[in-house]
Length: 242
Image 1: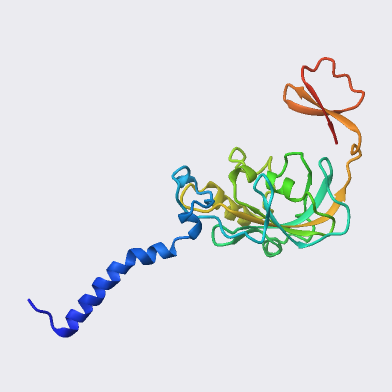
Image 2 (image 1 turned 135 degrees about the vertical axis):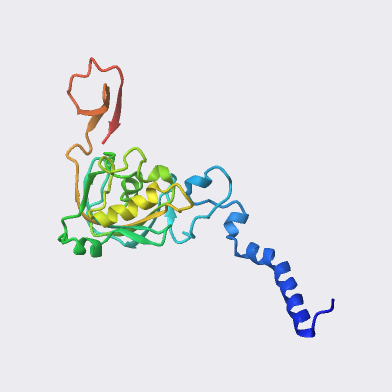
């Protein structure tokens, strides 16, 4: 059966589009994925060798552990080291999933939280915040502003603490907690990359800085004691400079 000229033209066009479809799809695939680039963390695709690639962070610096950071403003005050206490103003976004905020000034304002009430306070090296933040604040100074990107699960929130009670920062609002947990606890095809904007408000230098301290193996884990403490009963001890 012969088709009318108009119908024959449409059929030819359709066959041409179908032939080009695989090539068009291939062109849309991220170049990094075709070249074996770093894949974003998506639990359901772990170990399969394919998936969504990380966003382009060519303008960020990367630490040996994988923390990505970029300074928006250099500070001029004290710089934190291990053992120091820091006070941060912070915000957080699920940039791998629609860029939704889980901590921001707007969320705090809607919940009636005053400026400063949600500042993040922690001891550097104390293990009370995610590793990306503990590592990310090193090299900053008071007044400095930095963006920190978390692409790897070992640098972010631990799955063993879903309420973020032991390892923060915990969002200060209910809506923020829901936004964060939706991404962290979802095992489907969701990119779990997080962005933190942090500003160092204050650094309290540790009184032990510059002195010898000990980390002692106790029943509950490592415990820190000062010089002169009786450690004869402790089976393992290691020495470090604070």
